[in-house]
Image (cartoon, rainbow, N blue to C red; front, side):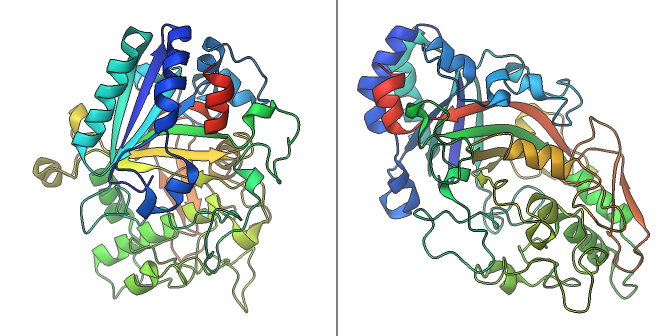
Length: 433
């Protein structure tokens, strides 16, 4: 929502009839619409949106089949399919199907968010129970816009006609129906309830990041080359090759040996690449960008044309910066208040073609992208192996046969849920009546 803070407020509905009436009369007029979100100048001081789980819609008496099996069954049932080692690391409140919905509340000040929470809780009273909350926050300067490992985030969003103004070079152009139900490009167009049109499935995942441990891993596994580089420079290079971008956002495909902050900050340049280079075979060349790098696994560009598998990401970091004790010991605190990571949010018209496809068929699949030699391996940032070890090829540009092994997860799934984010019209005319 392009605010400094965003609260995810997960709730359970106790009194559906009363909840629907208050939603209709009091909340619908305050929900932030798409036109407001597209222009930061027109955004209200506090942005508000709501999405419902399958059990939430059922509780509200909405029984139309949205034809999305992962959504219908809930994320708990999908944990092992996503590569999670069961739900042992999950926030307990995410386990099961007791979460009926999520309020998304964004603002630039904590006091504004608190005021909105107080208003919602006073309005609904016993009609609604708070199950869990997660406070997201943009990192302080100079790290604003960067995720907790330090890499610039949100660089490679798709462009949607009618919503994206002035697409930049290299930006993926997709049909609106890849994100919005019932629009051109939705492969199930006409098959779902009419009220679902212009809604989108919202995937939420709480991803804990072990930052000092990841930094130490890079130092411990930094390749010996280039020999003229310091250990820290070689560790930074390894991290860039795992991610596919330097911390500035500059892609290794354009600047393989050194970071280039000017390139990373230039939206007209930092997406203008396709992994293909004159004089090199795209199926064997990992000099510029490893096959298994995070950005190549999550958007394969010229490796494979994938117009139906795009997602619109809307995540935000959560948790504090590293404490002095964590920096001194190179160990993440066990204090729950010091947990940090990414509140991952994606929108898509089908979870199976969007987030779930990217997770299972790309990030977790050692053979993706197809036809590569050597075998790519896992996306070591986003990919999972049900808690087992992972590996990737291509991490050392001077030694193509070297395999980088990762026996520890530095990004830990803390669970989540699948939701449907309806249009304001659908909430007003169907869901709340």
